[in-house]
Image 1 (spheres, one colour):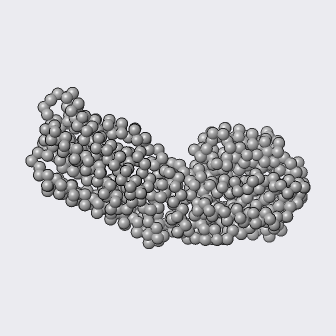
Image 2 (cartoon, helix red, strand yellow):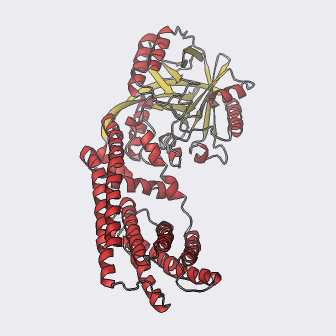
Image 3 (tube, rainbow, N blue to C red):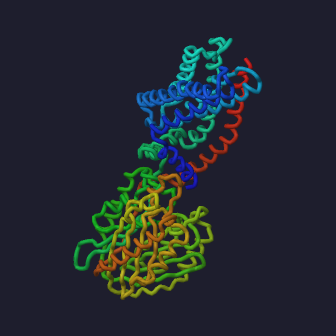
Length: 606
């Protein structure tokens, strides 16, 4: 997950760019300052400092700001006609600002060098800078806009050519001897050959880093990145097409506990635990699965996190329909009875398990809090399920990964980890008493007001289901969040001790809808803890008011041929990205330093 999380950090560069107006105003300011600084450092006319500032500032504004603004508009229109993605006018104008600022830095450095060596090198500095921003534009457009290399290179010429054209016009109209004793044919030759040198380096670099992805997964790295940016910037789901191409079909399971009102066919609530992972991020694939799946049912529905890792991310939103159909198929076969056991909690070192029996099934809530942890692997969950089915002689064992204690170092619970053996030993040691009594259930939903994904809260907010058995009340608290800040679970439990309940467990859905942000991980509880706790108390109290007698049934259904990332492709994707990073660390310095050296020799010494 770390790879995807790091890439998610790119979202801030696409979603928080300045408005078009702000980019233009910034270009005007920077260009004026650059022109004034250049004329003060390397005066063209023997005039006063104030005149140098005014004349130089006007020079910078006309040559740099006007040309860059015009090129921003032309670039955006050109990309639109070429059906490029990810580039609105504000993006194009920001690229003009970025390129112009880069050129301004080069011009100031060139002015200082010119003074030190007593030479007029402005023509060569200008060519050098324009070649570099041409290369920068080409690389960015090729990576982001999805229009191909050759079209990107053509569009990338707009800004440097406009700057040069206005520069030459200004020099003639103002009698500024910009190209003294310089052959325009030589200038054109330097510009063309210099651009070819840099573009060969860029093309070679991209092809080198793309080859592992093409070879291993059959997809282009640039396609993957540009569509990812389209999702982060515009909410496009085109990335799902690539995931469908590389995905693989698997079989997994979904379990549920269904409560219907006593002596009625009306469902009171559903507690669903799919062994399908709600990822990878944003609205792609199954990322918003807890909300999408819950909304498929008319009654109050909680979608908890089942044992699954990113291997089991659905490749497309439509795959969630297969989970829904499996649950509905199970509900048609469900056999209800008004019996359940009290909630019991057991511990073994770091492993903590809460158990409650419902009719012919049981629910097992698993957490490693206060230690940090991430997803429980499907294989581990399947082992727990098989073990508990045999030990407790039930028809269904609903394994829930509470997913409620996060640190940046949290790792998945995988076969072979010490935590797995602690859980297995704990289940072996449990001597649970299945003493059944009648059952009451109360439900409450809270959208948590103004809290949203910036606070780690997804679209389903907070849901609480309180279960009363033989006067014992247990609240199942579910945040639509991707994990919980370490220690926050205990804070919630301590804050709720005075409420009219005997037990509670805090869970998160692990929704990755909240991950479409600058930070890859976004657990609930990073901020506004007191406000969140008040929402929890309020929702628990509302669920107590909703208590009524119910009958309960459990079920476990197989989900066949659901297309996910798959264990093979997930591992391949991560290892391939790692190899791309490793190759880039070597290829980038070698190619670009070599190209810059050759470029400087060509422009300044020929």
